[in-house]
Length: 151
Image (cartoon, rainbow, N blue to C red; front, side, top):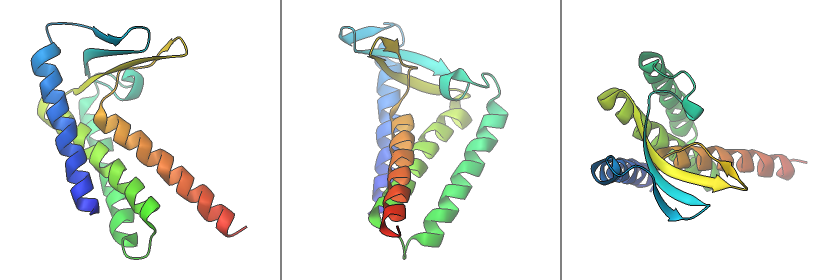
């Protein structure tokens, strides 16, 4: 089940990026819900918030190490861990692979989800970023629940 979820995340991420790049690259920002959500195609040569912009080789290696570490935890704990923990790692792996494909093949990451939340124009992101963030959130939740079980 976890492998299927990871593959689905990568496929959904890559297909959505391809679709947006194919259809929105010349259109610019497309407002979907005024004051809240737009589709804005961006080629991000950095990491989150364009940090380390232009340092693709470094970011590729960081991604490879990230995937290796998460995969190590995934395979080491796959038989003894709960579903929440394994789902978190699966989401993180799928997201990391999705962005790594862009970095290796295109030398940038395609972002397109653009939200304004409480007046703050949040940095543009993609499905892989969403999977990574949700995975980290679930991992934090799992650690908190584990802590409460042992308290």
